[in-house]
Length: 331
Image (cartoon, rainbow, N blue to C red):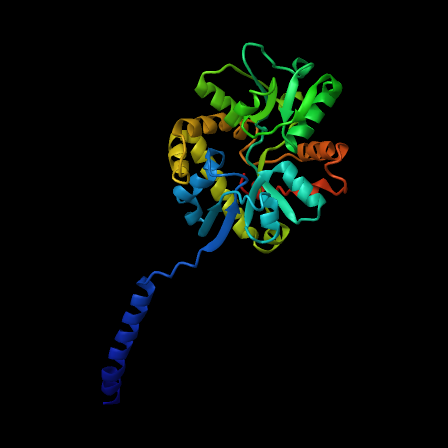
């Protein structure tokens, strides 16, 4: 009787427990909350940052469980290194020299990858007279901007042993190379915009590239803080992996990447944006190294040029300005 009684009582209970366990096993585990990060661009939305937009559009950030906010330049605080150092943004895009100067000033930012391995900054001219080498600048009127344009020109003249007094160099009153070239023989410009604009206008344009003369300055690099690298390396790795996948997608399909970029622009010229991206591709994917991979010797050369010209007045260990940790993992 006891056995019969126990069977009547406990067998139904065991059946209920078994059903509950089965239901629990079939219920999907709630996804962990996505890590929220932000990236500050060095300029306005344009195809210069197409890889970021593609990473978002193609779901690469979501696949890494990241919720990414993409912010353009803040005209009130233009340096993205300051935004990142102050904790206003998680990641930033800026020139390599911006990172080096920031480090010399004690800001704890560190580059994790290079986007533009070849710098698009050029010295540009229009018309039938071909200005293609530094010696062609002798006797010409140049209007250039402060900052990178100035110290790259100084490095170029030093490398080619040209006396700066042989050139008429003044400060440019505009960032628009087309407006600038109405006032001077040569102006600083970016190949990705100035040469593209000239082509679309049907103008003959010529360019002198500092990178052709042993002045290999990285342009856009991706960076974050030392604290982020130390405390959340998994987030840094996931963000970088998704971003580099975004750039690979943009390079493989520039038409789609342009369309995606235009979603971020209120008024954009599709032809110009597509031309900018196509001009950028060989500067990003140079074919000799994987996209994103940096070289210590390039960082050392950039640092040396900035020290020689007094841009960096407080020396520091240049290896603290970048880390290969994450690109090594992603190879």
